[in-house]
Amino acid sequence: MRERFNQWFPIRSGESGLVLTLGFVLFANYAAMGITKVVSVSGFLGQVKDHYILLVWAVDMVLLILATGLQSLIVDRFDRVKLLAGVLLVFAGLYAVLPLTFISKVIPLSVSYTLIYLLNDQQWRFFPVVFWILVNDIYDPGTGRRVMPVIATFAFVGTIVGLGVAALDAKLEFGPVKLLVLNASIFFIAFVLSQIRLRKVKIAITASTQVSMKESFSEGWEFIKTVPAFAYLALGMLAAGIVMTVLLFDTLSDAKLDLGKGFQSFYAQYNLIIAILSIFAQGISSKLIERLTLKRSFLIQPAIMVLTTILNFFVPGYMSSAVSQGLSRVSYDTVDLSARKSFQAMVPNEKRGRVSMFIDSYLPSAGTIIGSLITFAIISLGLRWGISRDQYSLYYIGFGVAIALVAMYAAFKVRATYEQSMLSWQLKRRTRGASVLDKLDFGGDDK
Image (cartoon, rainbow, N blue to C red; front, side, top):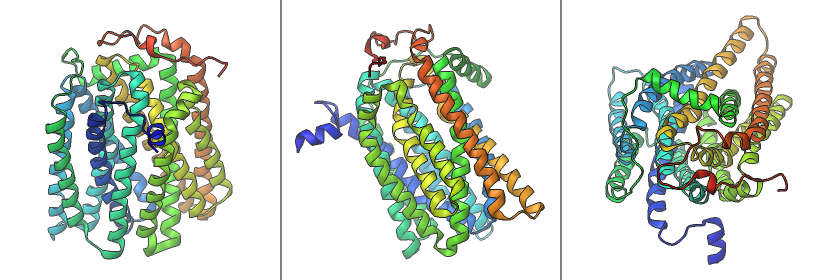
């Protein structure tokens, strides 16, 4: 039994305390998101026509890019343990204030649900960037490949707990006020724990340089475009953002149309299934990356996206779209996430924050904006010209298939340029002394 446990959770002596602390902080974030994710989406779609959520997504991503730009100015400048604690405290405060919008009789429910949705989505993209940059600072690349999948498992456990609460809300009707107060409490507990358990964590301190948002943006982009593998990874992330947006909208639209009032219960159970599958996928992700080697592991998620979008094109209905979006999401949040974080660990400490911002936030957000606006335009033209829903949906799903093929091309180019990129001057020695190149398994063609 112990050997089997060690196979699934390869934690060595003296590592469990820090891993469990980081795991709980990640658990808290995803539990809070799971609680309000279903409630905010079902509440929003209950107030407006389904395709208008695409415009909200586009605006949401613009706000996220602006917020990330501000974040990039501080992420490489300040103590990242204190930065994480600050983020936890801010989210606790925001969730404590939001119940007032429901208590107030002046603010319409549509606005209140929109605010919850916007906060939930900002949290989904904003928090993981800060968290994983800190984790990359704490662990060297070799250790990171081993413990990151274990830490990431807490995200899925938190999601299951949060979605379970949301599913109960669909039946027992706790109401948004109680759920928001619960979220505030969860974040405050995580903040207190971070103050107690992470204060003694020692990480490399980067040089504190004052740069503008434009300079921060330019430095991150300059690194990416001069390292070929990172450049193609960036293209893949942009394409993934577009495809995931198309698949998610098709799932929500189909389910809302077919299920009506049963949408919230379905959406909670659907996300719960995704979270459970993700736990199993995360459990094998480290072994899969080791077996395929890092450069080949980037092929998995694009291949799944291509197959599932083609399936969604030929087999209509909410079950098909739910399977397509679900499988793509699981692979994106498990194997692909672990591969990306291991890859970003090779970036020098003083640049890693800005590079991570680009790959994990700017590019997926830009993809969401592009996917949302193009899908909204297709639907709007379809409605204006009197085209049936079954017909115009094929156009935006077909668009998704084409972009998924672009993501697949980008993944093959990451694999082809991997060794060349490892020789780039940008991937210089890290500040803790040991060379990243000394720790890498380039994975020869004989594997």
